[in-house]
Length: 362
Image (spheres, one colour):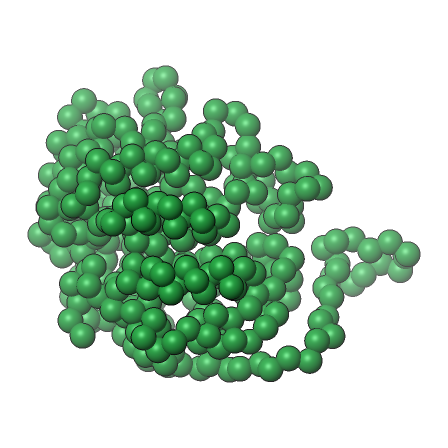
């Protein structure tokens, strides 16, 4: 877009260039083998009958070999027949390179026998090869009761058999139940994600009958409290903008883990606090990117550039660099700082913590 010839400048036309002279470290490969715990290679339909591949497995393997990614975890593997197709083309076709998670059958959540059905479905999918359970923010923000249209709470008792079954089968639960805090605030001049929400107004959960971010977080804590033998991976650092709160949760719930997917933009602008967080919880933090196909969301677009930014963030002490491969920061107009993690912590975050949860050998 060519700027207009005027004294005014639209925000969307503003692409400032930093004048800082700083080291720029290129990290083409991770220092240690990586498990990307949070990717979206596939997407299923609500009935669990079909699966769509958003990224070709062959393309995945090419990038994986270049970037030292040993294994990618496809969280959105659907369930039933869809899961089995994803399992066949990923986990069975390329042993050790891919892991597939199952998902709940939300379409049946208002059925009278849902609680038992869902527990049985997870057990069936586990026998078919599913290594974990993925819970999208459908639960808490989109799933509604048939008839009343009331939002279903994250800690609704009907899901207790599902959580218990996952724990009994040693299937970690990758759970996403909220979004950045700005998504729950008015889209006004005080909102630091105004550009992002202006472009995607349907991402706003302000008003109507939506719960607050803290209500969602506390409901998830209720679930973790009620099911202590089930291992929960709270995706996107659980609440990346409030690490003191996340620390409180981690201290209270030994079965809670977090991944860093799509949140280095938050972690990297609070590098000193983030570094302390990594040091303290180094055994319970997992590497993830939220990688998916397409180019609409550059902070998630699968490819070399995405991984190189994550590696730079974790391995170097570089300052003030982009958190996404895009001319304008897609989530907010800020830049990030590297953590320079020591090798002991890198090994755990890159590989050891995820491999322990999903049962991968070294």
